[in-house]
Length: 156
Image (cartoon, rainbow, N blue to C red):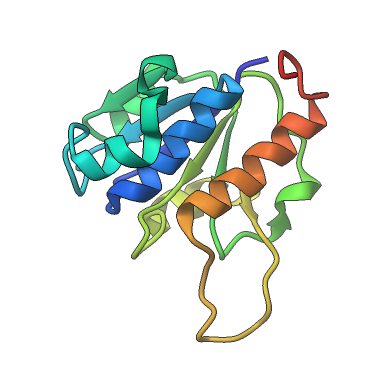
């Protein structure tokens, strides 16, 4: 079982470092779509990921078009507060991609419109001040649901 987490233009180094660590610990591939709000060599990214970076299967793309071209036949899910389905209402399959947007702006609206049926969300209270969860928390919530659905294959 191999899952793929995609971060679209991540901005905050510790979030990406924490996500990298979770991906390394679960055998999940991490994909980053540029531009990044930091250098991958940034000490804050490295610190959050601790000594897990050598365990990480990481790919960086110049833009979303490159990502979609290289994975033309893959199944994608798009995590967004605008999704109509809860993340627990979809079946995460082996090799699927789960994409998350920028911390400050999420995913582009044109991407969400083009893939409306694949948009998923984490339930939250309805309150304009509670707009979203932290990116690394959101990734872990959905990642572990996908792993659970697939019997935590290859994990001890």
